[in-house]
Image (cartoon, rainbow, N blue to C red; front, side, top):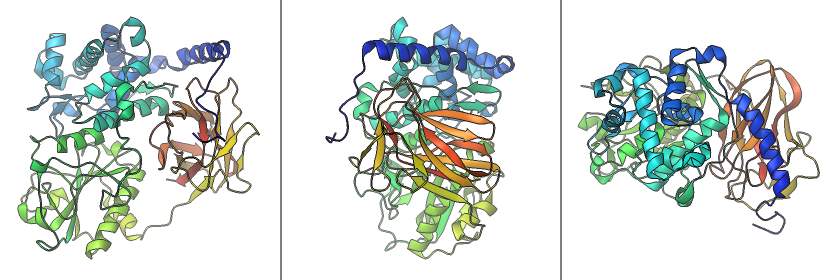
Length: 510
């Protein structure tokens, strides 16, 4: 780190201990689900499975939400052969479903279709990974120590994908979960990545000029899952085909790297924040359409989620995918209309139904063509005049190239809030998406608290600033009141380790 930033954070043991004890007491209360939610069958199933197999309950929920949004899909498998709320995989290379049956004594058929049994099976498999890693009783009480067990649960094909998978789960612990009568409150967790801390961070901008689309990360699909070509010399490109993954973002990327998949797409788009990964070069022929003629003439875009569940189709996903489609159309001279931007279900001979009835084609095409109303959005940088305030305890740095603008602010965590505030003039009461930008560094905070001043009071979410820097990260949608005021703050009150960073925020009406 440069001279104007303090070296790695050092605290007096007594001060840190007091901070941890204080926050731990608060989190014990905050981490407990409401009584009404405990009474729901799904919430009760998570409570039982966590207790029976000694797995942190909130971590188990976060893992399930990252995989399926807590939807068992009536026992139907994902694209990679995963079943149920916990996505227990059964395919030629992964046998988590069978492992769950062995560990629980429950029949495979029941694990596939019964939510409570499936959650028990997922907890058993996760605990088995923890045991293999040597987590003792004390370590198992710290959700952050389960990081590598979570990474193994994802059955990733490489360390970088294992990190991508586990980071998605731990991000949910920081942001919180509320779905299908199950709640996880946002909480401070320092994920212990171990050796995976050295793996490439796929949430960060590409380090090399790999992808054809500048805003994409690059992860190559297995060479046996697509056909090398030289489009447009060999074939003209005149279609964009929209797909839904029937699985998670990280799981889909990993599946396209599996030689048994025999399927791929050019791009994969993440639900929560619209992150894009390219897996097949535009010039090559991805195997995505189920029709060779359409494969040769199209670019395939997969979207994280399930056809039957509209909760995956976020505004961030629509906007990001539409920007990608617009780029492809401009590059190849493809008309921006529904005759040339089609769903997988429109391919001749298609047996797939994606993107399905919940995909909003009107919204999507408006974003592609720019024909929709321009949404209200404001970006506030730490250098924006009159809209950023921080005490003299916050330093200024330009060390990281991941920064937004010329510089950013930093401060060490303390047992006091001392927040840096970003203000905005909200035009009308309504729902707004809040995104944050920060540089990433191993010395930055593992659980930075972002305070959002909502219409019903302040809400806090926690972001791991050691990864995912140099890009906008959605931290949620919130009800905001109209008027000019402090809207988003970055607090120093955290038990996470490392510098707390305040760089920029973006607030958009949805």
